[in-house]
Length: 424
Image (cartoon, rainbow, N blue to C red; front, side, top):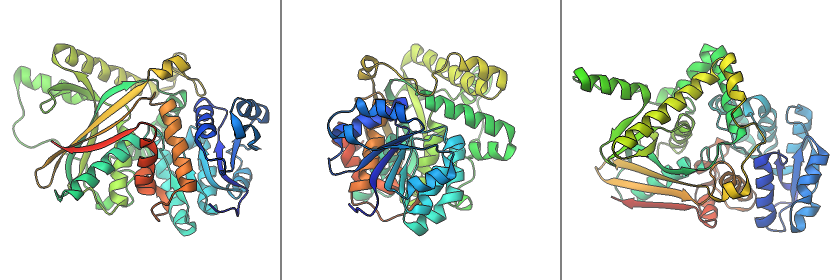
């Protein structure tokens, strides 16, 4: 660990809800030799956060910084080896800090789930970060570590068995208990505003390979399957299911609905494949769904889930309906009680058929609230890995699996995260 800069890690946004959880995690689990500072816009609020932390964290320095002040973030990036930031929405507040880190050779991690921000960061920062050696690692929370590391571990297991590469791959969200943060909702809001006002930006959001380093090297969007389509009642049911995203999965014998984070997670996973020289395979196709159960009730839950998601995304697209949703949805900085978070958990099952015809499944699970306590662990351990661990040499605007790989998996396993791969 080099001492050429003042700090090893600066946590920006430490006064927000997830920021406070991340600060508490670092205070409890960071080695005492790691020089950590807390940063945000208000010194008094930073001092309150610091006063709530145990042990040596009571002496952590405080740095007052506005992430939209270019000169201030350039100064901050030059003082530390790693920046970890919870300050969103990132499209509105995040780019000066990400760019300053890329220019300074400072590793950077955030929690963004915004396609447009990541696309802009790739365009603005990837080449510069490669030049300086910085790892700019977006999406280091529930967006999108479980998906990204889960598929990466699955591909590793398949390769180790000599069973080719991944083909059709689907993540089933089996269990999801916990909250969606106000910051995530605000990011959705800001992206809806931006994409609604610009057709080019809207196309970027809807392109399934929109985060690829080389879009021309990727397949076109999949068309409707060829062949005769069902007619009559069966045809009507098929049309409703296609429009809503609900369907009956013949493998699991469960009804499934769209997973609200799939539109972002899938693009991160596809970028990981491209950045790793298509180690998942050229035949790799990926999606994510939410399991809603078996039988008639499973079908009803799938329909309700699709309707709620459709209403949420439609409501975000216009100003009048956004103002209505703003009254009921979580606000940035808000979060659940400790009692509520203690009940949180999540479990993903990722299934694939390889190019040799072998069937595999991977499981990613953790006994934490995914959007809050779980995300604080994922972000905090990402930051410590960037400070302390021997990592792949790759630099640039990266995904968690490409930037951190086994180092992050090992760290998370130490906190009861599960990453397992088995042949079916």
